[in-house]
Image: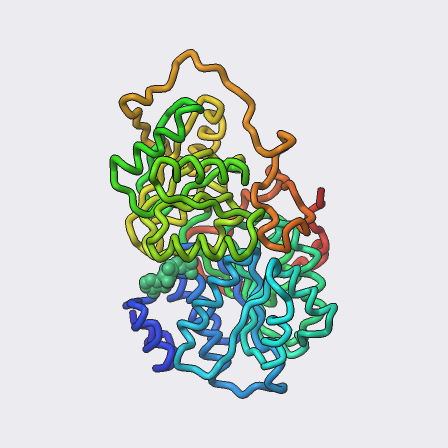
Length: 447
Ligand code: AMP
Protein backbone atom coordinates (compact mmCIF):
# COMPACT_ATOMS: atom_id res chain seq x y z
CA UNK A 1 0.00 0.00 0.00
CA UNK A 2 1.26 3.50 -0.84
CA UNK A 3 0.64 6.86 0.84
CA UNK A 4 -1.18 8.16 -2.23
CA UNK A 5 -3.53 5.16 -2.14
CA UNK A 6 -4.61 6.42 1.30
CA UNK A 7 -5.98 9.57 -0.28
CA UNK A 8 -3.16 11.97 0.53
CA UNK A 9 -2.28 14.79 -1.84
CA UNK A 10 0.85 14.83 -4.00
CA UNK A 11 2.39 17.60 -1.88
CA UNK A 12 2.16 15.44 1.24
CA UNK A 13 3.25 12.23 -0.49
CA UNK A 14 6.28 14.07 -1.89
CA UNK A 15 7.28 15.31 1.56
CA UNK A 16 7.06 11.86 3.19
CA UNK A 17 8.88 10.13 0.38
CA UNK A 18 11.70 12.67 0.71
CA UNK A 19 11.95 11.51 4.34
CA UNK A 20 12.46 7.96 3.09
CA UNK A 21 9.05 6.61 4.07
CA UNK A 22 8.20 4.12 1.39
CA UNK A 23 5.02 2.73 2.83
CA UNK A 24 2.61 3.56 5.60
CA UNK A 25 3.01 1.75 8.91
CA UNK A 26 0.01 -0.27 10.20
CA UNK A 27 -1.28 2.60 12.37
CA UNK A 28 -0.97 4.97 9.43
CA UNK A 29 -2.85 2.57 7.16
CA UNK A 30 -5.73 2.61 9.59
CA UNK A 31 -5.62 6.10 11.04
CA UNK A 32 -5.14 8.14 7.86
CA UNK A 33 -8.38 7.08 6.11
CA UNK A 34 -10.26 7.24 9.42
CA UNK A 35 -9.16 10.82 10.15
CA UNK A 36 -9.86 11.88 6.56
CA UNK A 37 -13.54 10.98 7.04
CA UNK A 38 -13.73 13.79 9.58
CA UNK A 39 -14.91 11.51 12.42
CA UNK A 40 -13.44 11.04 15.89
CA UNK A 41 -10.69 8.53 16.55
CA UNK A 42 -9.52 6.54 19.55
CA UNK A 43 -6.14 5.01 18.83
CA UNK A 44 -4.12 2.67 20.99
CA UNK A 45 -0.59 3.05 19.74
CA UNK A 46 2.76 3.14 21.36
CA UNK A 47 5.41 5.54 20.41
CA UNK A 48 7.58 4.17 17.63
CA UNK A 49 4.66 2.93 15.55
CA UNK A 50 4.55 6.01 13.33
CA UNK A 51 1.51 7.41 15.14
CA UNK A 52 2.58 11.04 14.70
CA UNK A 53 2.36 10.82 10.92
CA UNK A 54 -0.82 8.80 11.45
CA UNK A 55 -2.61 11.91 12.68
CA UNK A 56 -0.48 14.69 11.19
CA UNK A 57 -0.73 13.66 7.53
CA UNK A 58 -4.55 13.55 7.35
CA UNK A 59 -4.76 16.78 9.39
CA UNK A 60 -2.49 18.53 6.89
CA UNK A 61 -4.60 17.14 4.09
CA UNK A 62 -7.83 18.40 5.61
CA UNK A 63 -6.58 21.85 6.55
CA UNK A 64 -5.01 22.43 3.16
CA UNK A 65 -8.07 21.32 1.26
CA UNK A 66 -10.72 23.36 3.04
CA UNK A 67 -10.71 27.09 3.56
CA UNK A 68 -10.23 28.52 7.03
CA UNK A 69 -13.54 29.50 8.63
CA UNK A 70 -12.14 32.28 10.75
CA UNK A 71 -9.39 34.81 10.41
CA UNK A 72 -5.76 33.82 9.90
CA UNK A 73 -4.88 34.23 13.54
CA UNK A 74 -7.21 31.55 14.79
CA UNK A 75 -5.86 28.15 15.68
CA UNK A 76 -7.40 25.48 13.43
CA UNK A 77 -5.78 22.40 14.93
CA UNK A 78 -4.66 22.00 18.53
CA UNK A 79 -2.32 19.15 19.42
CA UNK A 80 -1.81 18.68 23.16
CA UNK A 81 1.20 16.71 24.37
CA UNK A 82 2.48 15.88 27.86
CA UNK A 83 6.03 17.21 27.50
CA UNK A 84 7.98 19.98 25.85
CA UNK A 85 10.17 17.48 24.04
CA UNK A 86 7.22 15.69 22.53
CA UNK A 87 5.63 19.01 21.52
CA UNK A 88 8.85 20.04 19.77
CA UNK A 89 9.13 16.63 18.14
CA UNK A 90 5.57 16.62 16.86
CA UNK A 91 5.89 20.12 15.48
CA UNK A 92 9.13 19.19 13.72
CA UNK A 93 7.17 16.43 12.03
CA UNK A 94 4.30 18.78 11.15
CA UNK A 95 6.81 21.08 9.45
CA UNK A 96 8.56 18.27 7.63
CA UNK A 97 5.36 16.66 6.39
CA UNK A 98 3.80 20.02 5.52
CA UNK A 99 6.88 21.31 3.75
CA UNK A 100 5.04 21.83 0.46
CA UNK A 101 1.89 23.29 2.01
CA UNK A 102 1.13 26.83 3.10
CA UNK A 103 0.17 26.01 6.66
CA UNK A 104 1.73 27.61 9.71
CA UNK A 105 2.60 25.69 12.84
CA UNK A 106 4.21 26.50 16.15
CA UNK A 107 4.84 25.10 19.63
CA UNK A 108 3.88 26.47 23.00
CA UNK A 109 5.45 25.08 26.15
CA UNK A 110 6.79 26.27 29.47
CA UNK A 111 10.37 26.77 30.54
CA UNK A 112 11.07 29.27 27.77
CA UNK A 113 10.14 32.94 27.34
CA UNK A 114 6.48 33.63 26.67
CA UNK A 115 6.97 36.76 24.52
CA UNK A 116 8.23 35.05 21.36
CA UNK A 117 5.23 32.73 21.67
CA UNK A 118 2.86 35.69 21.95
CA UNK A 119 4.43 37.20 18.85
CA UNK A 120 4.20 33.91 16.97
CA UNK A 121 0.53 33.54 17.84
CA UNK A 122 -0.14 37.09 16.68
CA UNK A 123 1.28 36.22 13.27
CA UNK A 124 -1.24 33.43 12.88
CA UNK A 125 -1.02 29.69 13.27
CA UNK A 126 -2.93 26.85 11.69
CA UNK A 127 -1.52 24.02 13.79
CA UNK A 128 -0.59 24.66 17.39
CA UNK A 129 1.31 22.01 19.36
CA UNK A 130 1.19 22.76 23.07
CA UNK A 131 1.63 21.44 26.59
CA UNK A 132 -1.48 22.16 28.67
CA UNK A 133 0.02 24.41 31.37
CA UNK A 134 1.60 27.03 29.14
CA UNK A 135 -1.39 26.98 26.81
CA UNK A 136 -3.59 27.97 29.74
CA UNK A 137 -1.15 30.76 30.59
CA UNK A 138 -1.80 32.14 27.10
CA UNK A 139 -5.53 31.72 27.58
CA UNK A 140 -5.31 33.83 30.75
CA UNK A 141 -3.32 36.47 28.91
CA UNK A 142 -5.82 36.43 26.07
CA UNK A 143 -3.04 35.74 23.59
CA UNK A 144 -4.54 32.64 22.04
CA UNK A 145 -7.95 32.11 20.48
CA UNK A 146 -9.21 28.53 20.60
CA UNK A 147 -12.78 29.29 19.57
CA UNK A 148 -12.30 28.09 16.00
CA UNK A 149 -10.41 24.87 16.56
CA UNK A 150 -11.52 22.35 13.96
CA UNK A 151 -9.41 19.39 15.06
CA UNK A 152 -8.17 18.49 18.54
CA UNK A 153 -5.48 15.86 19.14
CA UNK A 154 -4.61 14.51 22.57
CA UNK A 155 -1.27 12.79 22.05
CA UNK A 156 0.01 10.37 24.68
CA UNK A 157 -3.13 11.04 26.65
CA UNK A 158 -2.20 8.44 29.28
CA UNK A 159 0.96 10.36 30.11
CA UNK A 160 -0.93 13.62 30.33
CA UNK A 161 -3.22 12.09 32.92
CA UNK A 162 -0.29 10.51 34.77
CA UNK A 163 1.26 13.93 35.00
CA UNK A 164 -1.86 15.43 36.53
CA UNK A 165 -3.05 17.41 33.52
CA UNK A 166 -6.67 16.27 33.60
CA UNK A 167 -7.99 19.53 35.04
CA UNK A 168 -6.00 21.59 32.58
CA UNK A 169 -7.29 19.44 29.75
CA UNK A 170 -10.87 19.88 30.89
CA UNK A 171 -10.40 23.66 31.09
CA UNK A 172 -9.04 23.67 27.56
CA UNK A 173 -11.91 21.50 26.28
CA UNK A 174 -14.36 24.07 27.62
CA UNK A 175 -12.77 26.71 25.41
CA UNK A 176 -13.15 24.76 22.19
CA UNK A 177 -16.13 24.92 19.85
CA UNK A 178 -18.60 22.05 20.26
CA UNK A 179 -18.39 21.11 16.59
CA UNK A 180 -14.94 19.65 16.02
CA UNK A 181 -13.03 16.47 15.26
CA UNK A 182 -11.30 14.77 18.20
CA UNK A 183 -8.38 12.36 18.00
CA UNK A 184 -7.14 10.63 21.13
CA UNK A 185 -3.90 8.66 21.15
CA UNK A 186 -2.85 6.62 24.14
CA UNK A 187 -0.46 3.74 24.71
CA UNK A 188 -2.55 2.39 27.59
CA UNK A 189 -6.24 2.36 28.48
CA UNK A 190 -6.85 2.97 32.14
CA UNK A 191 -10.32 3.70 33.50
CA UNK A 192 -9.42 7.38 33.46
CA UNK A 193 -8.55 7.31 29.78
CA UNK A 194 -11.80 5.53 29.08
CA UNK A 195 -13.71 8.16 31.04
CA UNK A 196 -11.97 10.91 29.12
CA UNK A 197 -12.66 9.15 25.82
CA UNK A 198 -16.32 8.67 26.75
CA UNK A 199 -16.80 12.33 27.47
CA UNK A 200 -14.75 13.59 24.54
CA UNK A 201 -15.34 11.36 21.57
CA UNK A 202 -18.43 10.96 19.47
CA UNK A 203 -18.82 7.50 17.93
CA UNK A 204 -15.07 7.15 17.40
CA UNK A 205 -13.33 4.81 15.04
CA UNK A 206 -11.23 2.58 17.27
CA UNK A 207 -7.80 1.43 16.23
CA UNK A 208 -5.20 -0.49 18.09
CA UNK A 209 -1.85 -1.60 16.79
CA UNK A 210 0.44 -3.83 18.81
CA UNK A 211 -1.24 -4.92 21.95
CA UNK A 212 -0.54 -2.85 24.98
CA UNK A 213 2.38 -3.87 27.12
CA UNK A 214 3.96 -5.94 24.44
CA UNK A 215 7.46 -5.10 23.41
CA UNK A 216 8.33 -4.73 19.75
CA UNK A 217 9.57 -7.92 18.11
CA UNK A 218 12.50 -6.05 16.69
CA UNK A 219 13.98 -5.23 20.11
CA UNK A 220 16.41 -7.71 21.57
CA UNK A 221 16.34 -7.54 25.34
CA UNK A 222 18.95 -8.61 27.85
CA UNK A 223 19.41 -8.42 31.59
CA UNK A 224 22.91 -8.06 33.04
CA UNK A 225 22.90 -9.10 36.71
CA UNK A 226 25.47 -6.95 38.56
CA UNK A 227 26.17 -5.50 41.98
CA UNK A 228 24.80 -2.04 42.71
CA UNK A 229 28.23 -0.43 43.08
CA UNK A 230 29.59 -1.98 39.89
CA UNK A 231 26.83 -0.80 37.57
CA UNK A 232 28.65 2.21 36.24
CA UNK A 233 31.81 0.24 35.53
CA UNK A 234 29.79 -2.45 33.75
CA UNK A 235 28.01 0.19 31.68
CA UNK A 236 31.30 1.78 30.64
CA UNK A 237 32.65 -1.70 29.85
CA UNK A 238 29.64 -2.62 27.68
CA UNK A 239 29.76 0.67 25.80
CA UNK A 240 33.47 0.34 25.08
CA UNK A 241 33.52 -3.42 24.48
CA UNK A 242 30.64 -3.37 21.99
CA UNK A 243 31.41 0.04 20.50
CA UNK A 244 27.90 1.36 21.27
CA UNK A 245 27.94 4.79 19.66
CA UNK A 246 24.52 6.14 20.54
CA UNK A 247 23.06 5.02 23.85
CA UNK A 248 20.03 6.30 25.70
CA UNK A 249 20.42 5.43 29.39
CA UNK A 250 17.60 5.60 31.93
CA UNK A 251 17.91 6.36 35.61
CA UNK A 252 15.13 6.70 38.17
CA UNK A 253 16.15 10.11 39.51
CA UNK A 254 17.55 13.38 38.28
CA UNK A 255 20.37 13.07 40.77
CA UNK A 256 21.38 9.66 39.44
CA UNK A 257 21.23 10.98 35.86
CA UNK A 258 23.56 13.87 36.72
CA UNK A 259 26.00 11.68 38.59
CA UNK A 260 26.14 8.96 35.95
CA UNK A 261 26.68 11.45 33.12
CA UNK A 262 29.62 12.92 35.05
CA UNK A 263 31.10 9.51 35.80
CA UNK A 264 30.87 8.35 32.19
CA UNK A 265 32.40 11.59 30.94
CA UNK A 266 35.32 11.01 33.28
CA UNK A 267 35.81 7.64 31.63
CA UNK A 268 36.05 9.33 28.22
CA UNK A 269 32.51 8.44 27.23
CA UNK A 270 30.80 11.73 26.30
CA UNK A 271 27.53 11.85 28.25
CA UNK A 272 24.96 14.47 29.25
CA UNK A 273 21.89 14.27 31.48
CA UNK A 274 18.38 15.28 30.42
CA UNK A 275 15.62 15.74 32.98
CA UNK A 276 13.01 18.17 34.25
CA UNK A 277 15.51 19.92 36.54
CA UNK A 278 17.54 21.18 33.57
CA UNK A 279 16.78 24.42 31.78
CA UNK A 280 15.03 24.12 28.46
CA UNK A 281 18.20 25.36 26.76
CA UNK A 282 20.32 22.62 28.33
CA UNK A 283 17.76 19.98 27.42
CA UNK A 284 17.51 21.11 23.82
CA UNK A 285 21.27 21.25 23.50
CA UNK A 286 21.80 17.78 24.97
CA UNK A 287 19.11 16.33 22.73
CA UNK A 288 20.37 17.91 19.53
CA UNK A 289 23.94 16.82 20.19
CA UNK A 290 22.74 13.30 20.89
CA UNK A 291 20.58 13.23 17.79
CA UNK A 292 23.36 14.48 15.57
CA UNK A 293 25.68 11.77 16.88
CA UNK A 294 28.09 14.19 18.61
CA UNK A 295 27.08 12.97 22.04
CA UNK A 296 27.52 9.25 22.68
CA UNK A 297 25.34 8.86 25.76
CA UNK A 298 22.20 10.67 26.89
CA UNK A 299 21.19 9.88 30.47
CA UNK A 300 17.48 10.51 30.95
CA UNK A 301 14.72 10.22 33.49
CA UNK A 302 11.47 8.69 32.30
CA UNK A 303 9.35 11.71 31.61
CA UNK A 304 12.13 13.76 30.07
CA UNK A 305 12.61 10.92 27.64
CA UNK A 306 9.07 11.13 26.28
CA UNK A 307 9.23 12.61 22.85
CA UNK A 308 12.82 11.74 22.26
CA UNK A 309 12.57 10.42 18.76
CA UNK A 310 15.73 9.38 17.06
CA UNK A 311 15.64 7.34 13.91
CA UNK A 312 16.85 3.83 14.53
CA UNK A 313 18.20 4.49 18.02
CA UNK A 314 20.33 1.37 18.46
CA UNK A 315 20.74 1.06 22.24
CA UNK A 316 18.63 1.71 25.27
CA UNK A 317 20.01 0.90 28.70
CA UNK A 318 18.03 0.63 31.90
CA UNK A 319 20.72 1.63 34.33
CA UNK A 320 18.05 1.40 36.98
CA UNK A 321 14.79 -0.42 36.41
CA UNK A 322 11.68 1.77 36.56
CA UNK A 323 9.36 1.58 39.57
CA UNK A 324 6.38 1.14 37.31
CA UNK A 325 6.64 -1.89 35.04
CA UNK A 326 4.82 -0.17 32.15
CA UNK A 327 7.62 2.37 31.99
CA UNK A 328 9.95 -0.43 30.93
CA UNK A 329 7.85 -0.86 27.79
CA UNK A 330 7.90 2.88 27.14
CA UNK A 331 11.62 3.09 27.73
CA UNK A 332 12.65 0.32 25.43
CA UNK A 333 10.16 1.53 22.83
CA UNK A 334 12.76 4.21 22.14
CA UNK A 335 14.71 1.62 20.20
CA UNK A 336 13.60 -0.68 17.42
CA UNK A 337 11.37 2.12 16.14
CA UNK A 338 9.36 1.73 12.95
CA UNK A 339 10.80 -1.69 12.25
CA UNK A 340 14.47 -0.89 12.92
CA UNK A 341 16.49 -3.34 15.02
CA UNK A 342 17.33 -2.27 18.55
CA UNK A 343 18.89 -3.59 21.71
CA UNK A 344 17.68 -2.98 25.23
CA UNK A 345 20.02 -3.81 28.11
CA UNK A 346 19.02 -3.72 31.77
CA UNK A 347 21.58 -3.59 34.55
CA UNK A 348 19.89 -5.29 37.46
CA UNK A 349 21.16 -5.48 41.04
CA UNK A 350 19.74 -7.46 43.95
CA UNK A 351 17.50 -4.57 45.06
CA UNK A 352 15.65 -4.71 41.76
CA UNK A 353 14.70 -8.38 41.53
CA UNK A 354 11.08 -7.67 42.39
CA UNK A 355 10.89 -4.89 39.78
CA UNK A 356 12.32 -7.29 37.20
CA UNK A 357 9.77 -9.96 38.11
CA UNK A 358 6.98 -7.37 37.69
CA UNK A 359 8.30 -6.43 34.25
CA UNK A 360 8.60 -10.03 33.11
CA UNK A 361 5.07 -10.71 34.30
CA UNK A 362 3.81 -7.66 32.40
CA UNK A 363 5.52 -8.47 29.11
CA UNK A 364 4.77 -12.18 29.58
CA UNK A 365 8.29 -13.34 28.88
CA UNK A 366 11.57 -14.00 30.61
CA UNK A 367 14.33 -11.67 29.53
CA UNK A 368 17.58 -13.54 28.80
CA UNK A 369 20.29 -12.98 31.43
CA UNK A 370 24.01 -12.61 30.83
CA UNK A 371 26.63 -12.36 33.54
CA UNK A 372 29.69 -10.50 32.25
CA UNK A 373 33.06 -11.89 33.35
CA UNK A 374 34.58 -9.64 35.99
CA UNK A 375 31.13 -8.32 36.99
CA UNK A 376 29.64 -11.43 38.61
CA UNK A 377 27.18 -10.38 41.31
CA UNK A 378 28.06 -11.23 44.91
CA UNK A 379 25.71 -14.09 45.93
CA UNK A 380 25.77 -12.80 49.54
CA UNK A 381 24.92 -9.19 48.69
CA UNK A 382 22.30 -7.60 50.97
CA UNK A 383 19.20 -6.02 49.54
CA UNK A 384 18.75 -2.28 50.12
CA UNK A 385 15.65 -0.15 49.66
CA UNK A 386 15.33 1.49 46.26
CA UNK A 387 16.24 5.16 46.29
CA UNK A 388 13.65 7.14 44.43
CA UNK A 389 14.29 10.68 45.40
CA UNK A 390 15.67 12.93 48.05
CA UNK A 391 13.11 11.90 50.64
CA UNK A 392 13.11 8.27 49.65
CA UNK A 393 9.48 8.66 48.58
CA UNK A 394 8.26 6.99 45.46
CA UNK A 395 8.52 9.73 42.94
CA UNK A 396 8.13 10.20 39.25
CA UNK A 397 11.58 11.34 38.27
CA UNK A 398 11.70 14.31 35.91
CA UNK A 399 8.06 14.91 36.54
CA UNK A 400 8.14 18.62 35.97
CA UNK A 401 8.89 18.11 32.33
CA UNK A 402 5.39 18.93 31.16
CA UNK A 403 5.11 22.30 32.85
CA UNK A 404 7.41 25.02 33.96
CA UNK A 405 9.89 23.67 36.44
CA UNK A 406 8.42 23.45 39.86
CA UNK A 407 4.87 23.98 38.64
CA UNK A 408 3.88 20.37 38.41
CA UNK A 409 1.21 19.56 40.85
CA UNK A 410 1.23 15.78 40.74
CA UNK A 411 4.51 14.53 42.07
CA UNK A 412 3.43 10.95 42.55
CA UNK A 413 1.09 8.67 40.78
CA UNK A 414 -1.08 5.83 41.68
CA UNK A 415 0.29 2.66 40.22
CA UNK A 416 -2.51 0.38 41.18
CA UNK A 417 -5.55 1.73 39.42
CA UNK A 418 -6.53 1.19 35.85
CA UNK A 419 -3.69 0.71 33.43
CA UNK A 420 -4.71 -2.86 32.96
CA UNK A 421 -7.48 -2.73 30.43
CA UNK A 422 -6.56 -2.47 26.82
CA UNK A 423 -8.99 -2.07 24.00
CA UNK A 424 -9.28 -5.50 22.43
CA UNK A 425 -6.82 -7.26 20.15
CA UNK A 426 -4.26 -6.06 17.72
CA UNK A 427 -5.18 -4.46 14.41
CA UNK A 428 -8.77 -4.02 15.38
CA UNK A 429 -10.80 -1.37 13.70
CA UNK A 430 -14.43 -0.84 14.35
CA UNK A 431 -17.04 1.85 14.43
CA UNK A 432 -18.52 2.09 17.85
CA UNK A 433 -20.49 4.39 20.03
CA UNK A 434 -19.25 5.21 23.49
CA UNK A 435 -22.09 5.53 25.89
CA UNK A 436 -21.41 6.54 29.43
CA UNK A 437 -20.50 10.19 29.74
CA UNK A 438 -21.32 10.54 33.39
CA UNK A 439 -18.05 9.51 34.95
CA UNK A 440 -16.00 11.88 32.90
CA UNK A 441 -15.23 14.21 35.75
CA UNK A 442 -13.19 11.72 37.75
CA UNK A 443 -9.78 13.25 37.74
CA UNK A 444 -6.79 11.59 39.32
CA UNK A 445 -6.24 12.87 42.83
CA UNK A 446 -3.22 15.08 43.00
CA UNK A 447 -0.73 14.73 45.78
P1 AMP B 1 6.31 7.93 16.05
O1 AMP B 1 5.69 6.65 16.51
O2 AMP B 1 5.33 8.85 15.44
O3 AMP B 1 7.12 8.55 17.16
O4 AMP B 1 7.35 7.57 14.86
C1 AMP B 1 8.45 6.75 15.03
C2 AMP B 1 9.50 6.92 13.95
O5 AMP B 1 9.11 6.31 12.74
C3 AMP B 1 9.85 8.36 13.58
O6 AMP B 1 11.25 8.45 13.54
C4 AMP B 1 9.28 8.56 12.20
O7 AMP B 1 10.07 9.47 11.46
C5 AMP B 1 9.36 7.17 11.63
N1 AMP B 1 8.28 6.87 10.65
C6 AMP B 1 6.99 7.24 10.74
N2 AMP B 1 6.30 6.76 9.69
C7 AMP B 1 7.17 6.05 8.92
C8 AMP B 1 7.05 5.31 7.71
N3 AMP B 1 5.87 5.19 7.10
N4 AMP B 1 8.15 4.73 7.21
C9 AMP B 1 9.34 4.84 7.86
N5 AMP B 1 9.53 5.53 9.02
C10 AMP B 1 8.45 6.12 9.55
